[in-house]
Image (tube, rainbow over the protein chains, first blue to last red):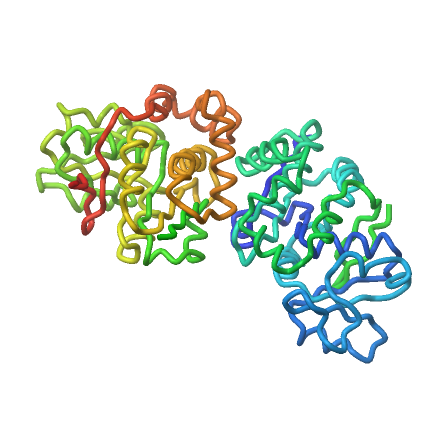
Length: 238
Length: 238
């Protein structure tokens, strides 16, 4: 059985891929898919990603937790923002969270309904995710959420980490998976240091989310794999 | 004066860039922009890139040389194909060549009329190109032609080589330029060996153009910089 792994470097390139036969892994390391992984790990019943603060309002009065952030600050009246530190067991255990994201939601919606399955990847659940992908017969498309359709380093590095882990079980790799893996191998001993090269580095510093960044670059603190069911992300049952 | 350098990894992403203020360098290493560089170096009056063999026919009976290739073979009735070995002084000196390309032409047409200037880059004219870009006040956009809108390694490596050369004269780099430079630094001591990792490697072997590939990876055997004027690529006058 010959399996293929490909890396879609930004959502703007998704139409080049035959995703119907693939498990699509959505990657938005800073911070959507890291926070989602951590929230599902910590017992959130479901996490519903929406594109903007206004969409979030459609879910008010349903007993859901609403997470919305603008310019790094929690929006007045909302329960919390996008920091993974908000997705602890005390805060989200047994709850449904509605989360506003921009890049992550766009990537999710593009893959939704077309892909064989849509799951969530982050450094936090790297090994668990890779074991699952290895156990399936489907091809894998690693979909980097990027930044406003542009290539970004952090999502590419994670895609490269997955390629590196899965190399033995897959036979076909595209050029972007080769590049992502080599960048990961270059960066892996100091992911945070490597990301200082990124154009986002200044943006991140301004958002004052350094603690979040360090958190999101931790390896394998979670076992959960969030999977898209309808409009909600829930824990994959294995 | 603060100058910006960016790498557009495939033509499908061109709309994300503000190319009006940039010199756009079109990159299609295997083989269009290498053959164009070599042809202009060898005294071709002009090279007119067209999208397909049929477009090429519009230029017959004008005394132009017609270059057309399908599946690695020169099309019957045409003067030669896309191999850089066809672009020698004896063959193209003083002549106008009409060249069919797919990826390269698409990239050229996207940049045409919008960019401040469109020039052609290849390993063959790397240093000469970089000296020129350094001497200008414009931002630089390195536009990889890719393969059918997909990311490819060879064009990205060349973009990385340019970023590496220009680092001192520019202040702003996007994430894709950081990635391209690091991949180039990884590959530079054995570009041909590195490209064996590429998914194109099998395709290239099938086309039986190994000699062309080796030729296209030579550094600085040309001084010429082809520049787009109207529909034609001609030698940049300095």
